[in-house]
Amino acid sequence: MRLKLPAMLDPFLLFLVGTVIAASVLPCRGEGAVVFGWSTDAAITVLFFLHGAKLSRDAIVAGVGHWRLHLLVAGSTFVLFPTLGLAVRAVGGGLDANMTAGVLFLCLLPSTVQPSSAFTAIARGNVPAAVCSATLSNVAGIFITPLLVGLFMGARAAGGGINLHSILTIAIQLLAPFIAGHLSRPLTAKLLARHKDIANLVDRGSILLVVYTAFSAAVVEGLWKTLSAGDIALVFGLDAAVLTIGLVATTVVSRALGFSREDEIAIVFCGSKKSLASGVPMAGVLFPAAAVGPLIVPLMLFHQMQLMVCAVMARRYAARLDATTA
Image (cartoon, rainbow, N blue to C red; front, side, top):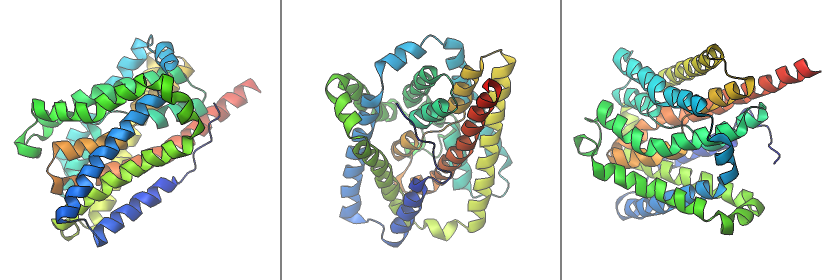
């Protein structure tokens, strides 16, 4: 499979910005909001069905034996990052309370599969292990993230806490279609391979629809009356700090534990990512509708930042290998 090197600026960012602008100018209200809510649920189901259908069983089998690698990635995702998020909340720094909560929420999310495996491949790392580790993170996150949200953000969550119903709702909305998609591979794998552009369109279109619905609810509740340009700039700086610490920590620890260069690459790229595709629908289930918009702002900024930084890192890993083998 040939992988194109990601551009420094992902065009998807422009669509995200356009979606936020559209929601700010023409938010959906009343019956329209109800229709968009149903459409969003359907789009998320299709999105995770496609994620499951695109996951190769051979990649899972090839990568599942690297348990030390998977433990380190899980430790970064569900221990290191939540600790950083709690530190941001404790410090505050004059940031809007919703933005501070948004930074903590992104730190509680699982890793992302496609970018992690793509960057690992570009950097010539252990791709099967990366696919398996990121997938395990996504599946585990369906249960772990709501529990962490309930533990650290319970007062902000819908109903004041996380219950079994919330976790089951997320499992039904994300895990069930993911499993169904993976089981459908004998029927859908070749079709998806022939129509990758359509699958990518559905993938990104689903996220944009969720973002529009979430921001519409926030705008109706007065989002832009409480959020300033200074808040956005401060969130950008905090996101950059969290990402930098995550990248440095996974690099240093993987080397200290004696992992190979290929495994190090998989650990760095899987252990530093946060999933926009999982995060937005989870926020929609776990938090009141009006709170979702500001909560996902840090996640949207982090998403683009991780793509840009990891694109540069993947190039450097590959160039370093070329220099040593020349």
